[in-house]
Image 1 (tube, rainbow, N blue to C red):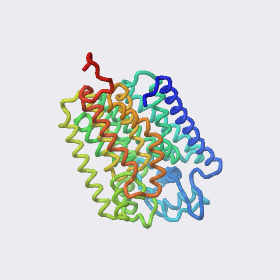
Image 2: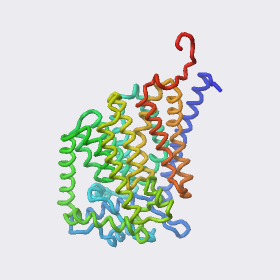
Image 3: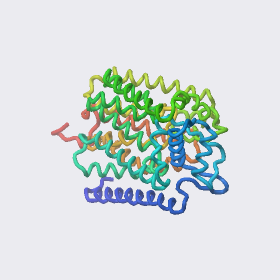
Length: 430
């Protein structure tokens, strides 16, 4: 069935209107929960529920305590005590382990300056603004008008990963913009700045092996120098303000959260959307072997990416090669990172935007199906979230990634003339 141009316009308008209304409804629900005092912690059927933001407030409070007196911020009992004081009268069933690295504690310390709802609002407003600013800086040379960016912003706001980042007050609102900033700087050959930006990713350093693969190949010594200096300054600042014992003691503090999930809350591998979650769901339990295997696979995949950036696709022009390998790196970081939740899939904004912009210029079957796939992603992410609640054997968000890579291959690695055109053949054009 071929639609007329008028009907196509009506269909586009209806789809955009549906996305807009859905976005207003789901974000409006957040204010309902704030009004009902159920936004951050609540009890339902004698079971406590807790989102990430109160945990971040507890981490900030621990950081302030450490600045005033020697404090072990990784003392599980102290963490539990501080968190309970913040979420009272809700009582967690098990101690909640805050296993974030020291820079996160320092970064979150300003959250203690005001009430939790106001702190959440400011935290999310700044994080959302940084996300769209970083994304604009990355793609500004690819878009033709502000209208394009407005449509992109609507697609992203209507997706589940963006909503859940805001709903949880998730740190991904800062780590994802930091990652996008890195890609923007390294793409524009600002190698030293790209290295410095890596320091921001100390908050979720499990992505550093993947980012580092591209940085080392493209930025070489300037990237490495920038990264080493910036990371050293951040760690030194944390050492002086929080105490050096919290820097040196961090590795051992990770063990309870990683290998004693039956005793502590904070890490639930089955809820993630990566290889680790797949192993846990298939085997039925978390084990030290699964965790160690995931770490090995993480490092091996990072090494494979380094080789890909160094050796592969040399016959493709730089910008298209960069976009494809960037998409491949982002996908690998989500699959093989030891920690990747649905909120981390906000990183897919970069591949989705590049694919949509490129597919609009391709009057081919590959371009058509790529456009359809990208435009369907917002409702798809919500559907996957709902279905994944029952914990099927395979984390459902993983199903987004293979077609994303396939679309990227057709859009950036195959010449347009090598893909079947949608134009009807005529004697004049073959």
